[in-house]
Amino acid sequence: MTKSDLVTKVSREVGSKLSKTECSSVVDALLSSITGELAQGNSVEIRGFGTFKVRERKARMGRNPNTSEPVAIPARSVPVFTPSKNLRDRVDQGASA
Image (tube, rainbow, N blue to C red; front, top):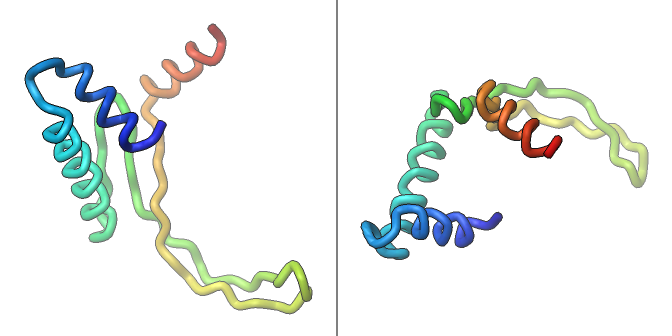
C-alpha cells in the first residue's frame, strides 16, 4: 500500500465528511507529527496499533563486500516499530485465514 492508496482508503472510510484533499492533509499531518517526535528522540505510542521509538546503534567495524577492506560504520539513531498485541493478533489471524 502506498501513501496515495492510504489516502484513498481513508477518504472512503470517512465518506462525504472529508474530501480526498483533506484526507491527504490529515495523513500528511499524522506522518509529520510522528516523524517530528522521533527526530526529537521521543517515542510515539498509538494504543491498539504499536509504538514508534528511536534506538541508538553503536559504532562498529564492517567490511566492504567487494574488496574485503575494513570500513568504520559510525554510530547512528534508527527508528523502530513495535506492534501492539492487538495488531500482532490481527495479522496472525489474517495470515492463517
